Image 1: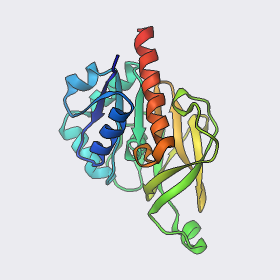
Image 2: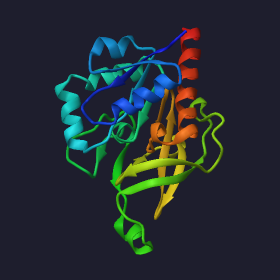
Image 3: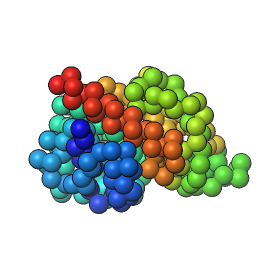
Image 4: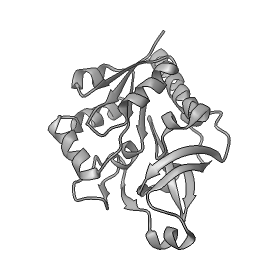
Length: 215
């Protein structure tokens, strides 16, 4: 039985590739900004690429701020991807708009003084490894130091370090995955990361199936 997955559309890009990856894994995935669709979905994916301020303005204009919070509060599986991780925090050095404040902490810029002096360029673009530190169903079967595809200049810095599920080094060690209650979120792009990235989405769908059975 297919799970109904809502992919939140707030005009932040990269949605179709996420949809295709979920469909390849067997889900019925719909790109939507409709509140009823999102609330009724079995699971929610919150992807995105772009700037913090424009994205938060779009979220508010589309009436999605409370919808996202309600989806998380409902206990259904929720997966953030790239900007969809950063916006879960309270604020971002990228702009002035308050973020969703689901998680305490802020999004910070990768420090040029730690990267450029070692020949690393910003944005961090390409393959890099993730050291997993927290057990969570979304990361089941993912080998330590697996490589995923990154495109970003900012990173999430949660106040509670116990929710940091993965760490990556790019001049500094930064949080590349979090796990908190029914929320998992990653800085990298699973849909651009080959078989190991699809495993993330398959694991998410397995979590959705299990959640439906319990309900």
